[in-house]
Image (tube, rainbow, N blue to C red; front, side):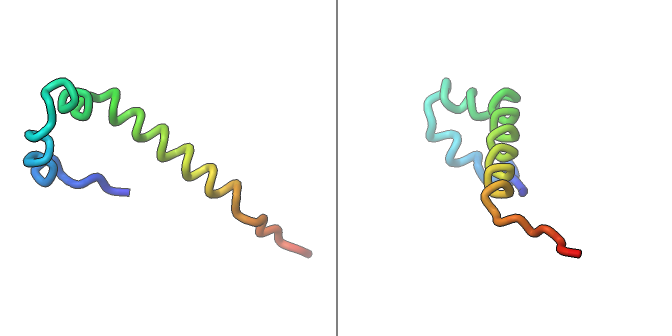
Length: 55
């Protein structure tokens, strides 16, 4: 997963209120994104049928 460069988001971020923009630019926000992505990956993985190898 790749997050677009800040240059791409800059025009959109400038339209947001300062407090909201600061939250999105904070390290805590990126940590939360990492945690949520990991949860989703695990949820998807666990929902897939087991691919057990029969011997």
